[in-house]
Image (tube, rainbow, N blue to C red):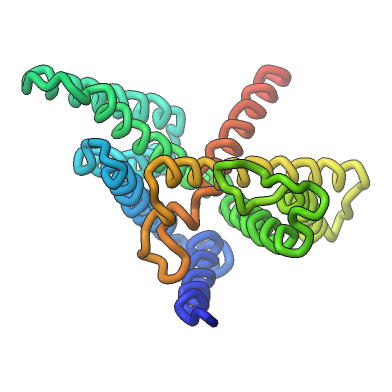
Length: 295
């Protein structure tokens, strides 16, 4: 049966995402990155709610309201640190927020004489904050580094997910009989490999598009392919991590807010891991260049 609700969400969501990622650059307007900030807050706010809801469905306890407040605080700190041009403060601020949140929860349990479930409740609360908020907030760092970064990563994630599905349906289980993993039995090795190849090729095409004036060497194309392939691997791991959480909690989807597409975490599970991964790579590359050339 054709699901019009899925089409409706796509027709609204895709143009909206394109505006958030590239609207300021394309229309040459300065909105100070506020559309990206609002978008990030919405994804994190809804995502952390879905995460804690899954945990509670599994019968475990979590400080959901407190965790949501802390989670929403982090992207705004990241935004302010970028706006103040002292981005190095962001790392210290996030560390301080996590430390204060941990101390607060533990102190609260001490004064309430609550022993049983302390490790579980505090740990799950912090996991949600780190996994959803700290990880996804890196999209703001990448946006201020260059608005093209989040857009390219989102396109590559879409290619990775779509190609994995198409290849999996077409030739899945024909060469490798066993599933890719017990975490997500429907995924096939063929689908995973196809995703890696097509995402690598997609990044090569993107590089050709941006460098069409000066041209692209064979070596640059090869590097682009490897980078795209690595992004695909990370994206698929991110997808599997979300599937791991859902299986642990005994739920099919993280939520129902996106009609026919599940929840926010279901749509951005790959990006949640890709964003911090790319941020770390760029950070260590910057350190290397600074060390080599004394910049």
